[in-house]
Length: 159
Length: 77
Image (cartoon, rainbow over all chains, first blue to last red; front, side):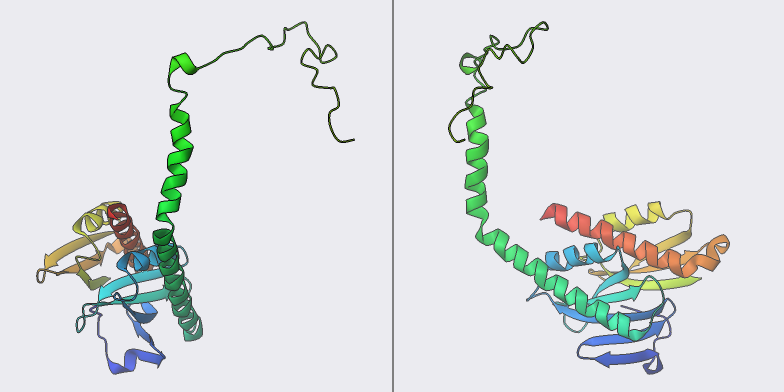
């Protein structure tokens, strides 16, 4: 990513993979995400979730294209500790989305089978010949619950 | 206020840029020029009447652009 007037003095801090610097738009923390570990869809899902609370910008690392640089800024100006924490939270979110993707992949056949069964039973009722209609028990307007034609009030079983 | 970003076309599709540009058309002018087969140079020039909120406008635009790009990518998945 190209930034205006970037210089070594603009770098505020760098610890354990989190790079913090100041530029025209304020303070920003950035991390590099290896797309051979986290799929790009994992990155987009995490980023999409995070734009609610932070400002984000993604760029491709020019030296190694498999890395995506994630730039994170607070929506309210704050110190570098908060930015550092935001980056680490983002890394946790990446792990979450990767795990979800793995689980979705492993359980795809089971989910498909359940859906087929659920919707498959509905097909039995598309044939009008198979649709039954019994309106004999629909109460008349003059009826009341005391008549209990279906004997619903009769106690059964336990008790 | 003017700011420039180099954007990767795989991350930010042209469709997302077009949509975001339209959404923010009242706040700034945007020019996009091609650098190579993978990258564009995007220059945002905030309109004078919005200069005071320029920083916020640019950052909100970049978030909108990212959201739109994520939607396009995830729809294609």
